[in-house]
Length: 363
Image 1 (spheres, rainbow, N blue to C red):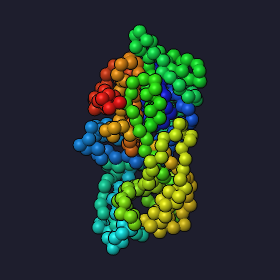
Image 2 (image 1 turned 30 degrees about the vertical axis):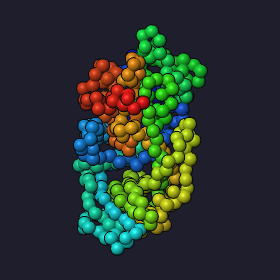
Image 3 (image 1 turned 135 degrees about the vertical axis):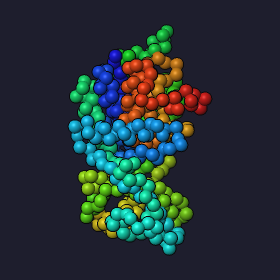
Image 4 (image 1 turned 90 degrees about the vertical axis):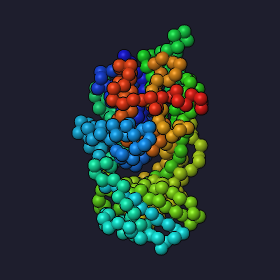
């Protein structure tokens, strides 16, 4: 069996990895470079129990446990570690409310803001470097026989009589395949021109990585930030094993560009994040911005992932729309799709809640 995966983000890479474990030939096609979009620019935060009550709860728990296994089986250090996670409030309009409510928290949270609660501990929350993790999955897949090819897929080809996938066209050349998986993040929108697929949207967000002047202990911080205009934002700050600190939190309604390499960065939004970091901790007062970034996370109409076979075309599959949980849910998605492709059904998890069929009326 030969499977073509369109997109070398964390989802496509995880699918290639788990297919390769089963001895299935996987070819990953990427128009830019692996992890060039959200997979390389996200925070890399993992939570086991933050989706309770949602359809993706089982997927999140499965994936969190798989992350633990992968940290031992992948022969790469990508900064995986278990962490404590805290909730903080910070208000420009009511600065008198910025007082700590709990007594146990990292001592570097020493400036403005109120540490309100513990949101997670090492049993339930973790973090990793998402770009390094994506490359670790790809490297392991390639070591087992998978291939990565650079190019832009312009169509998915089908047998018009059997209504079955026959391959894809890349750079004007036909490449045969027994199955094709669309894993292009928000750019899966392009696939609606080739095949019947619910629309996926992209929400743009900005982030920075900082090099602090002093070491900070392992932790993740989720803020409820009220600005001077009364608007609320949800910045996230995550310390990384390499000593850098990741911070995101401001978004925009910019339209999705044609390809990931055309994503623009608003430097003023990144500077605002830097200023916010300084208000959180005095450690960041003289910190240096290492990277200014922007990416689009993929979101479906109901904010749930699209995972499974595409209706009406045998051999066509999709895996996208993971919203803010793409890094977390990549292993479970990859494992489940490898089962579906090889055995015709899944064993590790029920993918029915994520079937593209559920959104067919919304296409």
